[in-house]
Image (cartoon, rainbow, N blue to C red; front, side, top):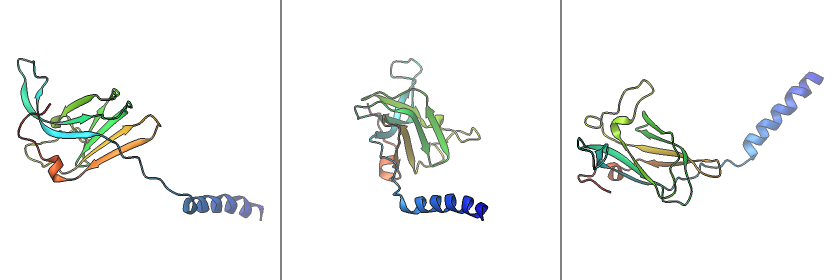
Length: 144
């Protein structure tokens, strides 16, 4: 009898908490995202060439840590350094890899979805998911 009480009471408490406690959605990441050609490695390099890139800008007053991006939920990129408030960074689409280390081929595969994850100062993971083809369409001219 004691065994039944010892196992059923904790189990029933966990089930009750699961159904009774409210679940919260992840916070939405306030980021500015542009997909378009950029000079790589930079505008001043003698051997620079235009490559399709994702440009992320942090418009908030907070620093973001653990910035991760996913293209089409298959290709991933991890930015190891914090993205400061007001700072921008750009990543060539060729830098996105699968877990099997295959590159994203922007010339033969359409960019249909982009997800950006970052850790905000509260410690929570904020997410921005863009699956609007108009926003993800490559721009024809470089943007700064």
